Image 1 (cartoon, protein in one colour):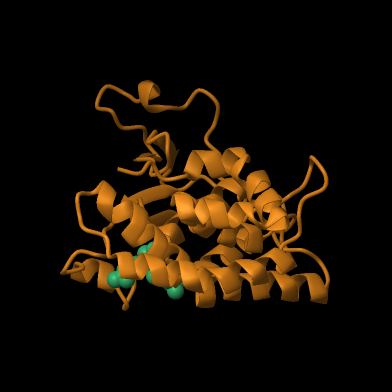
Image 2 (image 1 turned 90 degrees about the vertical axis):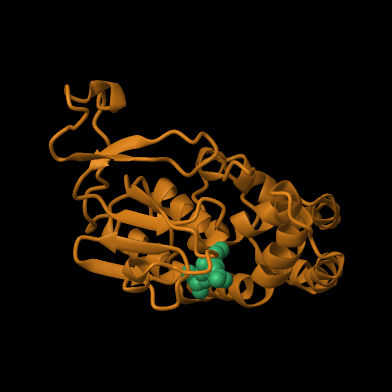
Length: 258
Ligand SMILES: N[C@@H](CCC(=O)N[C@@H](CS)C(=O)NCC(=O)O)C(=O)O
């Protein structure tokens, strides 16, 4: 089901191909430059046929999609779109009627909703299986994704990170009441997640789509000192997060905050 054997090739960039390799006009036939959205800010050359992720560099959901693509080993293009602009352009609304990010465009297949994108990437491309076998393990994975979307995103990301970390960094006033409400709601969410996550116990561990969905949300939450303190009080969840945050894929896709 996970499709590791049936999936398309991962479209990895061949050795020696990079921006410095481009021809005189800077163009390499069949390849396009993909500006990076991760912490390195570096871009890569990807095949023109590679899927393209439309996202906003600071979006936690775009980060989740990039993390899944990176863990799967799928090279992809990147198109920057700020969904918080007052007028999301019509060409983008044609891809996403709700004007949010991200959207994955793979040839003639246009897909929005991050959990659908993550599952598609896992099942349509070759690479490590990111979904476990077995009804219970899959149900647990789906449960964690749903908890993250339904109960974690708003308090952890929009309230604590958005008002306590992001806004001050871009010179905007954060609302203290939002931060306090987010921290209060976070207690129940973190307790629940502490009981749900599986702490990796082996070096060769492969994360699931649940781990990849949750880690960016906790990463943004822990960027607030109060968030980091709350996380540290839950040893299981803290150990799980430390393992996720130590992964190359996490570090390479983590947005460089302003
Ligand atoms: N259910 C959507 C949520 C996506 C979402 O809310 N993205 C945020 C950025 S992290 C966004 O586009 N926000 C724009 C807005 O709220 O207007 C998904 O899973 O992709």
